[in-house]
Amino acid sequence: MIHFIVATSSEAKTLIDFYKLKKKKTISNYLIYNNDIVSLTISGIGKINSAMSITHTFYEFNQQKNNIWINIGIAGHKKEKIGCIFLVDKIIDDETKKKKYPFIVDNCQIKQESCVTYNKENFNYTNNLSDMEASGFFFGCEKYSTKEFIHSLKIISDNEKEKINFFDKNNINNLIKKKIEIIDIFKRSIFSIWTEFFEKNNVIENKIESVLANYKLSFSEKLEFKKWLAIYLNSTYNQEDNIIDIKKDFQTNIKKIKEKLNA
Image 1 (tube, helix red, strand yellow):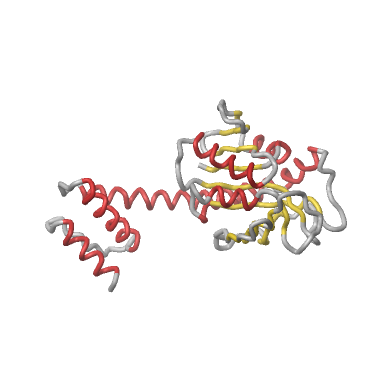
Image 2 (cartoon, rainbow, N blue to C red):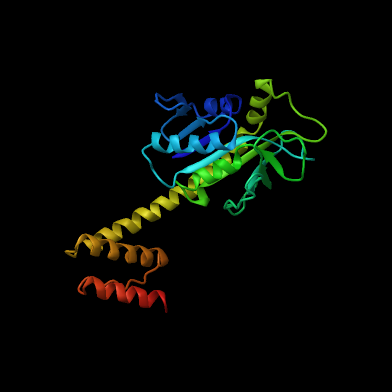
């Protein structure tokens, strides 16, 4: 599933309309919209709100790990023109100075830029993007997914020469609307990677279960054998090489796996 996290309803409107999302009945304090494959949560402004909204969203949708998480929002920059869109390739938290490096897919057509997340509005522009959510978003998502599936897209709303009227919701909505096709293309490219990831995992999981079906093991033995089978099958995915011999006991097969991996 794809989870969009946005700070405000102005940033959410175009996404809700484009993906035909419906308001979800929830006991959460957050507004959540969804269809069968896409959800959108309005987090509120700030990195803490962003991080908390991710946890709420995770539990609202069956606690499924390794889903896609995309933050869409506005940002400032010293020189970039209003309306330009960027994929964040480095996140710096201004308060903690911690840094994170999202995984950027090959052949991505969106310009990339680093982003500094501040605790309050910042108009001391630099050559980094500036926002109030990205670090909280990324740190929150890391608990539930891998870097390949955690991304932040920022659209320039202000620079050292001009800025939009932040109190006019239509201004913010129009910034998102003008870039919705680019956002959707990016979403589909990540979804394709995600689909391949889960197909691979399903193939490996089925192979593991077929091997384990040949053994009568205790709970701890099963966990150990499963762990080493997963390591081995991930390392040889789409290869013909197979050293598992179901006629041998599981400890012998684990030993063979370790020898193969260390070869």
